[in-house]
Amino acid sequence: MPALRGIGVDIGSTATKAVVLDTNGEIERTVLMPTGFSSVDAAARVAAELEGAGIAVESSDVRVVATGYGRIAVPYAHKVVTEITCHGLGAARLFGPEGTVVDIGGQDTKVIQLKRGRVVKFTMNDKCAAGTGRFLEIMADRLGVSQQEMGALARTGEETKISSMCTVFAESEVISLIGRGVPRENIARGVVDSVVARVAALASAAPGGPYFLTGGLCENSFVVERLSALLGSPVTTCPEARYAGALGAAGRALALS
Image (cartoon, rainbow, N blue to C red):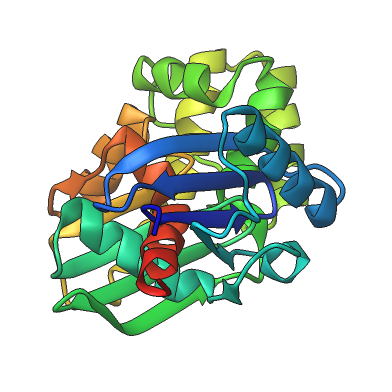
């Protein structure tokens, strides 16, 4: 019997990720792409990219688990699993079985408590985009920089208050600050601090660290620094943490064998 692979497909509201694990549970390949308008189309594009790399998603030696916002749109998945479970499993694989996972996604922020590698409690902010990656993306566009560039820009800025809890009103605040000639780096600092403050408030309800950051902001070092400062505890992350949901799903896929 050929060696089995496990594939996790995480279709988020903004980005779609996939992780392929070999039979030993090692990461063989990752995929990252914008989700776009259609989750069904995103799932098809993942399949096409993997098949281009010689990994057929409907092969008899492959098991697929789908997760995320668009998990029901993956026709070749053998099982669907909630993103809370998969993010918890993926974070436990990356960072260890005990701690608090902070996942800043495109449309929501999740705080997940892990005990012995399992999710024991979670909370979400999915009512407003003001504490999410999408908020940073919108504000970065307004400032004419990328999200990563905004982090570097914010590091050189001075504290600037952005008080609105709503993305629309916060954008109006930013436009007003631009009109008043406030330096771009100060506005960037205000935007980052606004997001991090909301995330920290959500995470502070958990018993405490260690804290692990997953999601698309895991490579934004200034966000990591500011979140660590507000939580009063180091926040651990790594580039692979943006794939945490897909990684957890891939681990569950291997278990289906």
